[in-house]
Image (spheres, rainbow, N blue to C red):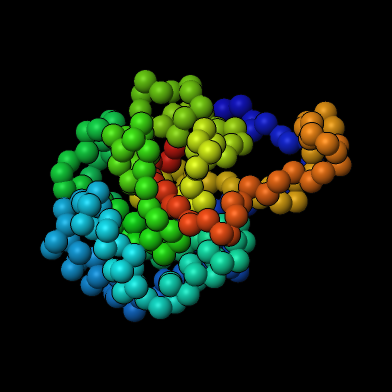
Length: 242
């Protein structure tokens, strides 16, 4: 793989791992995992998909049944915006998940990752209004990011043979989400997800031209607090690089 292009300027980057090294990460306790399992069991009786409109409508309410410590952690993250958050300790039954599909449009129904999909939406609902793009994965809220052979060599999350360049998620749209929420379902090669904050990034005059002043600090990547938060959910079934 080609090395990731570097920025001309200082920027702090972080690797998100299954066991977060950041002191700000949250690791679920056994009791919290059991509490979450009971909630998901209840939701499965009424919903066969995380895309169920009734579930999406009720998700902000049902999310208040998550463990209190999880709610507190995500509320602090939403209010303080430290850059990223990691919740670890979720059990994943690799046998129950089954073989990785060849394409996101070949998933069985109900999905073998239904519990993970439901939980991802609940976490997202604690941060904002969950939504999806009509032009991506048939408008689904939870995306399945997995290797697709015809995308090999492309700068896409579904190209497992490519190290993606630094990028802002969903930068193509002026109303992109405040948060992108990820869940790693399968990662046999321990591939990491790397994120970076632009708050401490200083660009040279050769990198950027700012109207009015060449010394103005680049605008923060975060949107105004006065706007409603919007969240995107993605479920990772593979070790595709991000």
